[in-house]
Every structure is written in C-alpha cells, then in structure tokens.
Amino acid sequence: MRRFAVLVRSAALEALAEPLSAILFLVALVAVHVLPSFHFHQFGEPGRLPRECGFSALLVFGLAFATSAAVHAVGRELESGTAAMALSRPVPRPLFFCAKVAGVFAALALFGAAVACATVLSVASSEMGRLVTNGGVYVWGPGIVSGAGLTLFAFALAALANWRWRVRFCVAACLLMAVAQPVALVAVAGLVKIPFEWGLLPALGVLAAGCAALVAMAGACAVVLRPAAVAAALFVAVALSFLHPVRAVLPDIQRFWLVDSFAGGGTASVPDMLAAGASGVFLVAFWLVAGSALLSRKEIS
Amino acid sequence: MSEPIVKMEGVHKTFRDFWLRPVAEAVRGVDLTVEKGDVFGLLGPNGSGKSTTIKMILGLLAPTSGSISLFGLPPRSRAARARIGYLPELSYLHPFLTARETVRYYAGLSALSRREAVARTDELLARVGLSDVANRAVGGFSKGMARRVALAASLVSRPELLILDEPTSGLDPIGTREVKDLIGALARDGVTVLMTSHLLGDTEDVCSKIAILSRGKVAACGRTSELLTRTGDARFTIEGLSDEDAKALAAELSARYGKPVAFDHPSVPLEKFFAEAVGAARG
Figure 1: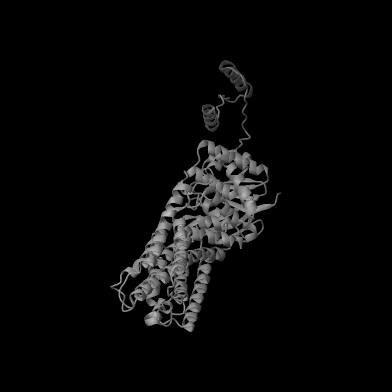
Figure 2: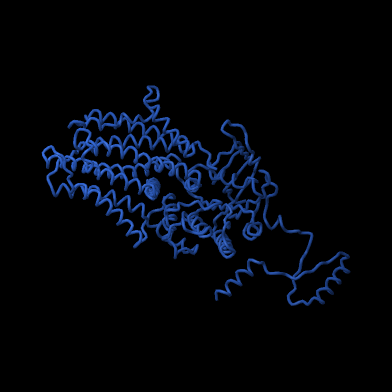
C-alpha cells in the first residue's frame, strides 16, 4: 500500500507540475466564469451557454491535460529509464501501472471538481441575471467577479509563493485555483439567495468517468506506443467507439455526455447516470488490466 | 565456497524486431557466478552485452534461453529485488523532485517506514555530500550531482547486492575517488557489489573479481589479482636508491641470473596526485 501511495503521489505531482496543466486550469476556469457576460448568446435560455461550455471544458481540456499526463507517467517513464529504476525495486509491474494511472486520475479529479464548481457558479450567475431583470438581459456581476477574480488571485498567489518560498509554481497554481472554486461558490451562496443547479455535479462526474476511461486507455497504449501513436490511437478509438462490436471496450463519449438532459429546465435521469457511470468503471477496469498485462510482458531496455 | 548471490548459466539474449525476426544477439551463453562479499567487475567494450546482462539480472529483460537466479530466486521475484540496489548507467531521475524527495521516493518504493525513510535519506545525502542542496530540484543539477543523488537512492534500502552500471560516469576525479572509497566501505560491511565499467583503472582499484565480456561472450573471468599478476616475473622497490646504484644493482643481477634486468622509478597515480593538489589548494 505504501508503494502504491508513493507512486500515485509522484504521478499526480508530475501531472500538475507540467506548465501545460497550469495553463489549461487557468484558461478553462476563467473561460467558464466569464461566460455569463456573453448575454446575447444564450442559446434560447440563460445558463445553457455556461453549462454546455463547462461540460466541454471538462471534456476537451480535461482530456488534453490527463491523456498527456498519462502518456508522460507511463510512456515517458519507460523511455527515460525512471521506470527501470522503480521496477528494479520490489514493485510489481501491475501495481506500477495502476498507481501511475491512478495518480493521473487524482489530477483529473482535481480538475473535474474545479470545473464542476465553476460551472455550477457560472450557470447560477446566468440565471441570476434573468431573475434580476425578470426575463430581460442583465449581466449579474458578483458571480463572475468572485469566480474569475478568485481564480486569477489564486494564480497570482502561486507566483508569489514560488518567488517567496520556492514552491513548485505549476503545482501550487493548479491546487490554489482548484481550491478557489468551492470558496467562490460558498462565498456567493452566502451572500445572496441564488438558484444553484446541483444536478450538474453528478452529470459532470459521469463525464469525468468517461475521461478517466480514455486516460486509462491512453496509459495502456503508452506502454507499447510512442506519444504520437497514442494520440492517433485515441482518435481512432473515439471515432470507432459507436461501432457495435468494439463499443464494449472503447469509450463512447456520447454515452457520458448528459448535458442535453438539462435543456429547458430538465435533469439527467438517475438510471442514465448509473448506467454511464457503471460503463465508465468497467472501461477503466478493462484498460487497467490490459495496461498491466502489456507492462508485465514488456522488455524494459 | 561462499553462497552464490547471482548465478547465470548458459544465458543467451536475442533482441527481436516487431515481426519477431532476430535483430541482435547481445549475450551468447554467459555463465557467471557472483558470490557473497565479492566486488565483481563486468568489463567490456561498448556493445559487449554488459548492460543487457545487468538488466537480465534485474528482471527488466527476460533471457532468450538459459537460467538466472538472484539469491536463489527468479530475478523478477519481489523477495529477491527487495535485497538489491541499482544504479543505472544514466541517472534517471524525476526533474521536478528535489534531491530529498527523490531519495524518499525510492525509500517508499522499497517500503521503508516513513520515519526510517526520513532518517536514511538525511544520512545518505550527507554521505554523498549533497546535504546543502537537498531541497533543490534535481532537474537543475549537474551530471555529477545527479549521479550522487542516484547513488544515494540505490543505497536507501540497505541492499545486500548493489548493482552499479558505470558508477563513476560523469564524476570528477575527487567524486570518482569518493565513490571508489564508498564501494570499498560497503564491501567491508559485507555488501556484494556487481559493477560494470569501461574505466579499467577504476575496476582494478576496487574489484576483487572481474569478467571480461566481448561480443556477448565471457572472454576471461576470475580473481583480479590472479588474472593480472605475472607470477613468472618479480619487481622490487628500494627506497632512497640513486640512479648509479640502481644501474650497478641491475648489472649485478643480470650477470648473476643471465637474464636482462630492467628498473624504473615508481610514479604516483595521477588520481592521487590530483586529489592531493586540489586538497592543498583548498587548504
């Protein structure tokens, strides 16, 4: 268990230490927070634009961040020789693979939780604009200012901590920006009575499970393929995932995309979320087993 | 005879391409035995199969045929790997971790308790002379400093067998001397050392046994002293003898035994001279 925890921690730290991670956290979170200010583009209902963009941010930015982290954590370690050093210790190869991918899951969960909080606050800010004007158009500032402002403040705080105490800037920035999201949510909820759409959280969790399945698949592919080939394999997998024979083992993103259920004041049904969540768990388990088997057979030269 | 720590019998290793066609036969029928307490040097030119042999012993590569045992167990057994430390040819380290975190990471992988890991890390960083930079990220270290961190990481689990692939690579002469002294100290503490090197002087200084690999085969193997000593010749050192006296003595010995007698003046090894000169300059 200690070995597993050590490997998970190092993989999560490695994922967050990449400059790309801090950039993706910043861009995704600030973008989601400022969306309610685009009040002329509401797609027919307030809250729809931030809601759809929140889901898109988790899918696109989360996948970019987590799959590159998985390729780093598995493929680059095998190429650079750090995996050889770790595997010369009493570390079973399946444990090494699962722990590395679990570390990336932890970083993805942090990103997913931050985007989920930002999305709920952003949707609420859009709704608040509609409530204040009784159906008219109005940009409700407190939500945008506290969300985007706290995110930028967290980023600046990380820079200050790096200058003052030499802490790792990218790791500190990601962690502080993630912490800033629930703080902004709680602060706004404490200030005004605002309608929060909490049902978005489990739906975003389901989407995160779909992303996790793709991350596990990327990790398994990275055992035997180079990074560019892993990207191509993921693209082909997503493109073919609707085909019936391979659907069972390829993550079909459509299955995890539940945002449409929220259109017109609707909500995602519990059976749909449970089915998609179970599919995500199965796919993650399948690709973890596949990756472990591939690594166990691999010659590490 | 001591207990064999590493035993290789008839080991072959053939690398294959994607289509399973043989590409290179790196190791061809190697038989080796490393016994407890040995400082065993594996020598050979580039491409002779040294690193492949080491990786098969570590269980990172599987032999195509033949058998390898580590402490009487298969190389991939966790029980066997719990008893070894490994320093690879290049110091593969995570650049975002500090020196202290790196050594603790490997302590964690060796399942040392948190308290033991902390104490052992501080002790080893002091031993390799990196206490002052323990909190700096290793990504900014010089090659020699990274080598010291990797060496500390290889020692963190108090291994019974230490496998060193080119241990002095990237080190300055003083660092090289310190590593050789460390290997000597570990051997005195009962640690078995298996090292590869192409620096013959380093190997000769520290290894009690050597094997020379050439094109994947063992070209020579045995005790260093037995392999290098020419028992048919004799050499004397007489302190404070002038050139004239030495010439006279050589002529006398030559006349007495009817064979040519050569003499020279002993020189200090450059490594020792360098260490003394740098030490004197530093005061």
